[in-house]
Image 1 (tube, helix red, strand yellow):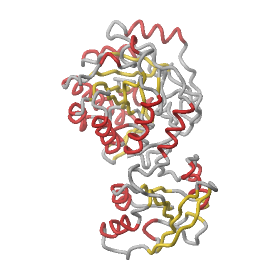
Image 2 (tube, rainbow, N blue to C red):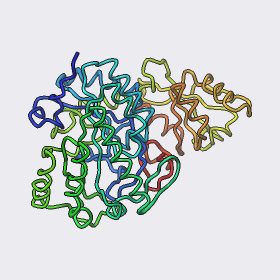
Image 3 (cartoon, helix red, strand yellow):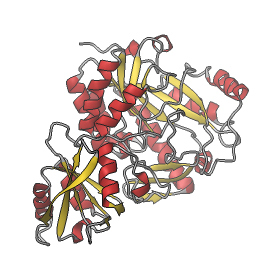
Image 4 (cartoon, rainbow, N blue to C red):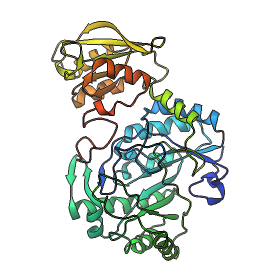
Length: 420
């Protein structure tokens, strides 16, 4: 079935009252820190990029999408836009796109990215018929970019100041050029930040137009507390209108953007419905692979009261389930850990030990066991606190971000640690 490109409500103003979109929040990590961004805050009454009430695995995302399409049959677009950056989470992003394309061959697919790590995935995006990609490009001049970006993390190395801006801008422009070489529709978002880049947006427009960008979205910056730019006022409507008028000489303008959340769903401009948010919450409580029968959670604990032991140091694990009738967690049994040593063989044995567990809770975990367990459909959750509070909260779909450590999948700490 041919893709109906005109049905994309973000790229075609005539479609936005008829066709809906859904953002699948499968990409929590980010590889840059913008001075206007703080994803720690999540109010359901606000629309801004980078916030999501829940996070989903690719399998959970497909389950949620099926439920969402039943509730809202006018959904024509599946997008991935965070809450971090899709290509700071390439495995999750690409697997989600593969699953959706297989299940919904007629669905439009799109991603929104900062562009830093886009290049290695453009060929597969084209193969999957991802029809639309948005890149946020806030500066062409590295001196301006250095004011906007606190750091950029690329190939496990941190970059700051002019060096960071040069790296990011170079990757963005190269990515835009390659997208157009493969016939993918490209939208550029530019955040208007008064006193920082408002004088520079025309240069951005002229440059991206020369590389083939299809449409420009000049977005007013959103003032967010606890950011470097929290004392900068948002641009006036007059400033935004004037910039849109000037840049329209180079590119068509998107003027109906609602600064969508990373879990936005439905018609642009409408708030997510309670029914849809319940479906999102239900999906987040399922095993990472929803078809698996995984009723339990494992816990690394020194004394059996707190989650307070590193995954690799535990000599036994406590297994918990959930009693839906009493709405409480229940202890199942204790399982001895595999013997130490043996490299990945130990973690593979641990994955077998947890074959009926959707996740394991510990106060710390190394990269190797996390990778092996994740590949087996077992989520590694790094947190600290009372076991019953954590277990009950997870099974009930409650917000337990206050228990997670700064390596958590839920939010960017702003330091660059763990945002690979």
